[in-house]
Structure formats: structure tokens, C-alpha cells
Image 1 (cartoon, rainbow, N blue to C red):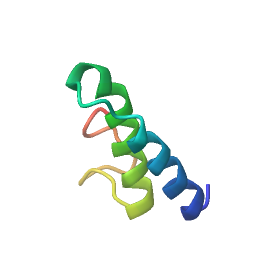
Image 2 (image 1 turned 45 degrees about the vertical axis):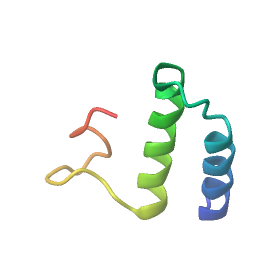
Image 3 (image 1 turned 120 degrees about the vertical axis):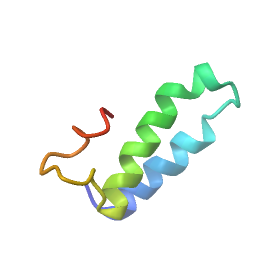
Length: 55
């Protein structure tokens, strides 16, 4: 995916947040994963994305 597509998807997900922690949990997880892709971040000491944090 291109960065612009990822940013658009992030905005869509953020607009779906309700403020209820339990309802938003899955959405926030998706947001976290997309933000890591956008920023080129992955857990330290791992070559596989998100294995370290379990996301």
C-alpha cells in the first residue's frame, strides 16, 4: 500500500472511534498497526513486524 492510502485508511478508522474503550479496542489495534507501517516502525530486536508486541 502507498503511504497516502494508509493515511486515508487511518483517517477512516479514527472517525469510527466511539470513546468506549471496549468497542474501540479492535479499531485502535488496526490504527496502531497502520501507524507502524506509515512510520516504518517495528518492535526492536525483531525482523518480523509485530511479533514482539503481539499486535
